[in-house]
Length: 201
Image (tube, rainbow, N blue to C red; front, side):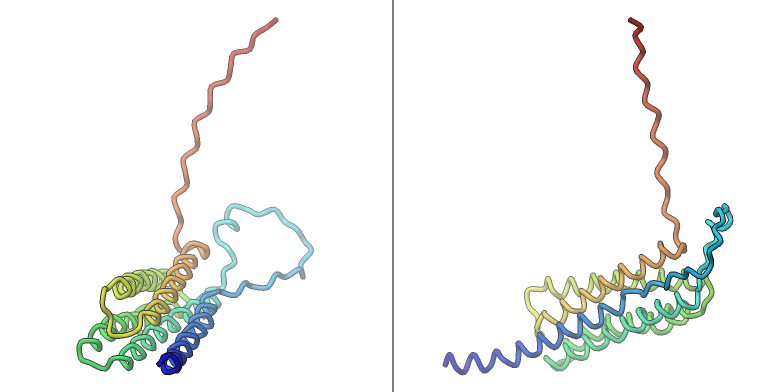
């Protein structure tokens, strides 16, 4: 019987390794490539206030990178739902896994996708905000599935979806801040500390 149990565990381990490999390869897609540094110009000029406020940002490149992340998250969400449904084919499980996945993928594909790839800064900012909100909702959905006491499907695949959603959240929110679409409030200046009186000897 022990030999029979070991044979049953092999397909499960192979599935988990395949899912883990998919998660690693997909998560690396959320790492935005850094633009190359050019040393062609040797003239050094002092930065002005306008140059600091309006950076030389290529919004087409930003749209390309963020678009890949946006549509990639939609594909992963639908793939997770399909795999989970195939593990336990029932109407209840279909509603449980396909409901949130279809809604999230639809918003990413129809709403935020065209916005982040438009090349317009205002639309990119709005699209990133929508994608960030969707990733937060997906994290909550996968968290509830993992916390459920009973699951008709293995929870490993839901954990993969949670990891990819977390990676998407940090990527979208980072693009909002780093690319200047959202400005964080600055801390107020600390009050000046009183100086000690000097004593003449």
